[in-house]
Image (cartoon, rainbow, N blue to C red; front, side):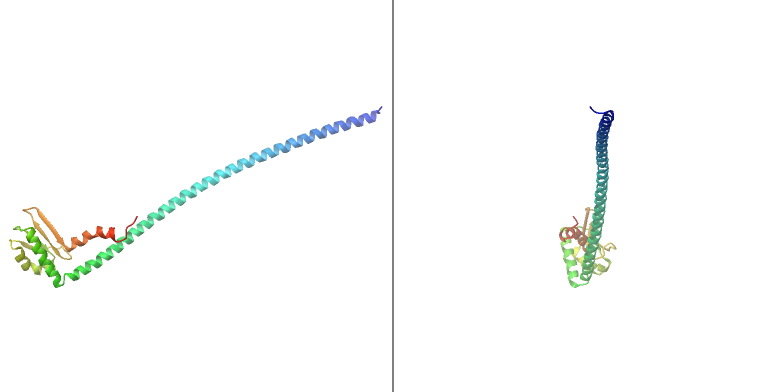
Length: 198
């Protein structure tokens, strides 16, 4: 039989073992709780970071789209200005060539032929023929071609050459100036020059 001292020792050992077991269990639960809380906190932080990253990506995409749109608009504007500059340069050069042409005998023949054609199509009395001021020296020749009591006037709106015919009584106005013919070529030039902006 065990002595009191031995029994006391056994009870103490049992109590200590039980206490140790409970302490180990509490430590394990605390560790499990800590791990769970840590995992939950990590998940919350990761979710928050993911949301922030998505917001920043959306902002970057929006900013990039706006920037690209602005650059496209600026490039388009720049190309339109360059196209207009090139077109104006080409038409200015052609205008100079036409002005040189108006100083040649071929132009005088062109004007007489044009007058004959117009007189044939519009054989009307009291018509007004309008010329560039520099071409007014041809007035007597043109008067002979039209031969129907026509008035021949210098028109300050004709800068290159050619002529206009107007007959108010018949409601006719014909513009056969080189100015308008050149202007009429712009749409053709835009569509055939390869300078289109798409």
